[in-house]
Image 1 (tube, rainbow, N blue to C red):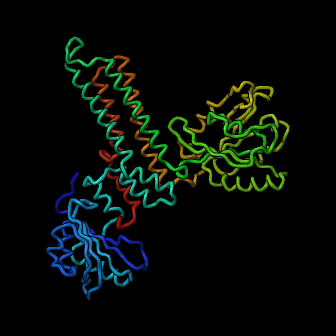
Image 2 (tube, one colour):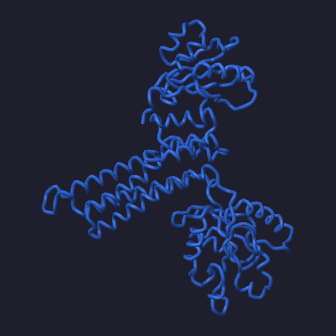
Length: 461
C-alpha cells in the first residue's frame, strides 16, 4: 500500500540520546528536498546539483541561528529506507546544537516522528513486509550474537519467502476448487479429488517445514525454560531423557550423579521450550555438590516453569515433603508411581513412571499435555506471573500461531475433501488458511496490532 502524496514530512534524532561525537537527524517525506535546500550548502557544489541524484557530501548546515559543519546524505525516492525522499544530517553531537537544529527543521514543516514511524512507512510503502519489519526491531534490541543471528534471518526474508510461497500454493489450490464448482466429474475441466488431496499434502509438508524453520531460528534465550526441580535421585534425569526421547543425561541409582546442567529443545503440540536438568537439592550435600547446587539455583530462578519431581516411593516415608515446594509456577510430578502400592488415584498431580523395566514409560502423555497447557497460558499455572519472555519470544509466538492456524485449517480441509464436503466450503477453509499467513506478513494485519508492534521501536527508527 502506498502512502498518499501529501503525507507529512517527519524528522527525528536517529542517533542514541545524550552527548556524542556526532548526532544524526533523519528527515523523510515529500518536503525533504525543500528542507535540504533551505538548510544545507554543500562544499564545491550547488544544492540543485547535489539533489539531482543520490548524494553524500560535506558542507555547512544552517540551523536558524548560525551555521555548523555537517555531512548530508541525500536518498531520493524510491531508493531509500522509507521509499520516500530521505535526508540525513550528521552534525556535531553537542546537545544544544542538536536541539537548535531539530527545532529549525520543525519550523520548516517537518513534523516530529512517532516511535517506529520511519520503519512503519517502509512497511506501508512495500520496502519489506511486517515479518521483516519485526526483524528490524529484533535486530535493534538484540543483546547477544544468537539474537542478532535470529533477527538477521527474519530481516533477510527467510520467513517471508516461505510464507509467500505457501500463500501462492494455497491460492492455486483454492482456484482449482473454485474452478471445479462449475463442472461435474465427467467434465474434462474437473480436477480429480486425488490431485486435490495430493496438493494439500504437499502444502501441509511445506507448512511444517516453515514452522520448523521458525522454531530453529529462535535463540534458546527467547524460548520458555522448563526446569526439573527436586531432591537427588528423584528420577529427574530419567524424566529428562524420557521427555526428549534420547539418553543425554547419565542415569544411576546413586544419588548425586548429576553435577552439570543439561538443556534440550522440546516441542509438544504447538509449544516449544528449553528443558533443563540440573543437580538435585539436598541440605546435606558435600562441598562439590553444594557448588553445583548453587549454580542450579541461579538457573532455577530464571525458569518460566518448574517440574517439581517427587519420588513417590520415598515421599511415602518422608513426612513434611510438601514443605519443599518451590516458589513460582510449577507442576507437581509424581515419579516412580509403579513402586507405590495402593490406588494411584489418591495421589494429586501428574503421575509418571520412568523406571519401568524394558524401557517402558507410563504417564508421559499426561505430562506432555500438562506442559503444553501451562506453557500455552504463558507458563503461569497457579495464577503466578512469569518474568521471562521478551520481544523475540512475543514475535516468535505471533509467527508460530499464524503458521499453526494455517496448518490447522489446511488439515481441516483435507478431512473435508475426504468426507465429500462441497468444494465451496473447502475453498472457504483454504481462504482461512491464507488469511492466517497474511497476518504474518501484514497483508491483513489490523491497525491496532501495527500500532502495538511499531510502538516498540525507538523514535528515529
